[in-house]
Length: 273
Ligand code: FAD
Image (cartoon, rainbow, N blue to C red; front, side, top):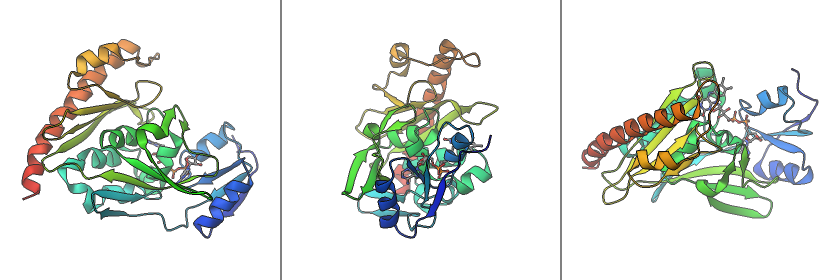
């Protein structure tokens, strides 16, 4: 279908983009367009104004102090090639970037766009939840930092205000000797996660396992006992993958992610020396 008509603004600065959003509550940010344009074509989204932020200087990965800072406009392709993500402790993030869509999607789709879209089957929220990521949000009122766990409010719903833009994703460096991994079983038609699991294993800490594709949004399982936690979890089912099949699959990918994260933790201990 053809999208409803919208005015287009190519923002020359972050301030211009923020002012345009503040002036029109029906405006939407346009980054790579890989999630927004499909929902506009279905007329699920009908923004009056598209504020294209693609020309702004909001891309790149850098290590600042205790954390990685990733510009919201960094594409999946840039992330797959980032030397900063080679550390085994950050393996979940690298796995997720490689697992997204195809080359075309990875060339245009951005990390900020994926998190703002908040698809309950998206890969990045699971990987970044496991790694304890936070988001930097800017509005005409200033900036605020929100943990990803609080930013994600439900399917396609976030804590983002109408006049806010995600500018950065902040990923704390895991402890030395940590390992992480992301494993997914793809839906054969869409490539999205039927079920995906990320795991973070850190020395002297309880392992973290997060899941995507199995419920209203990504969530973390309590402690190390994946099977017991999954038995309690509210899991989504459909004709393709009924609830109990998804529950079983979730256990399988969670254990695979944990095993890979443990192997990487051993590699990370050597990586640091
Ligand atoms: P856009 O489409 O430009 O924007 C998406 C939403 O976020 C819009 O509501 C927009 O207003 C908002 N937005 C964008 N940037 C910002 C910002 N900086 N601040 C505030 N709001 C913002 N994803 C997966 O996880 N796994 C997959 O396997 C996968 N496969 C895909 C296959 C195909 C064919 C396609 C088309 C998409 C696939 N995706 C997959 C989704 C893809 O990862 C996202 O579409 C992409 O990352 C979104 O980024 P974008 O820059 O294109 O966002």
